[in-house]
Length: 314
Image 1 (cartoon, rainbow, N blue to C red):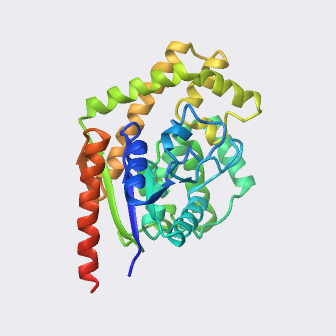
Image 2 (cartoon, rainbow, N blue to C red; image 1 turned 30 degrees about the horizontal axis):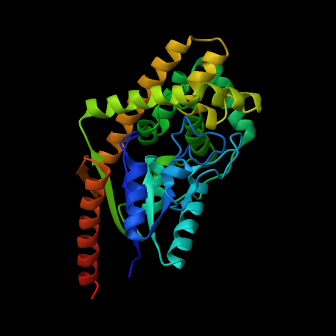
């Protein structure tokens, strides 16, 4: 029989973190983070990383496992997450996957193939030079020609991912979209939940969160990272909030403009997340209420699902 895996997914600022904690408390579970930014240490405010108080004693895995200047990718995450889930099973607990990085989630829930070539520094340097000389839009159009499926899932401004997709194609002659192709066929007894709310409500929550981050000291957090020598080009510093505040600290834009850009870029990011998750027919969308009500509703649906699954396997 497949082992159970509960997942709480969805866009940023939708309330996944607190919901995941409450579910873990009620279901004897542990949280496995599926957020590509929470892996980095010293990046707490801009990532909305749950504090010790917010975690309420619930173990959280794959948080603070990398230094901000280190690279981390979905293939590494897949290995780390599956190891964490196996360890949770060994303790007789329920793993609860919580996050909004769509590819990270599917790397765990479905059978993605990451047997891809390693990095080619010489080729990457060439592609980076082309991006600087001819523009990131030129590089993105190049990807659109050779791998339109991959291009559709990558934002034109995400030069790092554009370069990686081109790198795989040039080195192997195969599209990265084909190599990452996954069907909805999980090795787990899986149920996915996401909170549903009007778009304007979500955007209001995003704007309030950004204001709170500024109040809590996001500017100082970014300053410390830069003083530590974390390159602005690193994956971590390309995160929402970090790249905009870094631009402010370097005198490239005003603080007012930086905050405006963080809010705008986060809204756009949330829209892309929703588009990604809406494509997955397995997700059970729950109307957002208060944490207590949502927790109760999801637990009821989860128990019904598990009971039905057991009957089918008798």
